[in-house]
Length: 212
View 1: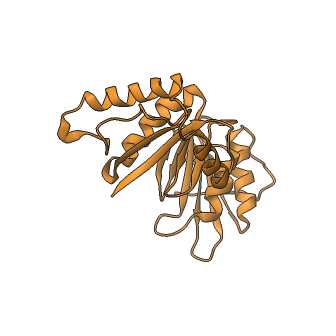
View 2: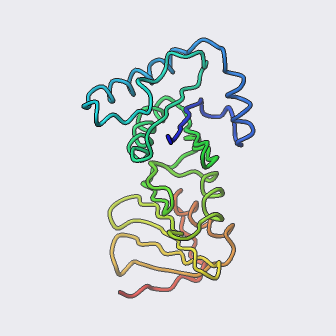
């Protein structure tokens, strides 16, 4: 079984239903220049590897009548590598990545470029408010955590506790600047992490120093 990724222009959809509608509307349309360009990059990177190390589930990508959409399928053991490659190629071209297995639309519009680790899904190169709204309430075992890192020792993280509450911690450069709090409402967790992402950590949140 393979894993599918879809690249589509930023802003053309905001929900899975809208994504499906957009993809259907592109079927049968001539491949756009930007899709051909992205496909060329993907195929080139794959072609640099020995055949046994190919990260594509098909011989190549692109060249189909899919309009402004690019479909990329890969083996399961290549998901992380392929997703990172697609972000590298798509984000500078204002393209979003859609994961039809998880029904996640990852759109770079209004993003903050921080390194994100999602406990259940791996690494991502940016954060948006929409992604936080999607991810935080759905954090679940076995790895119910999310970390956003701006620089070494500068990060915010949350862990969903078994009782449903969230432990939120942030570090501002050193162990003596590491603070934490407990929040029950996922909406408040989203707001707090997004505030940190845009450079404003609320001081009235009941932070306590975390000792190590």
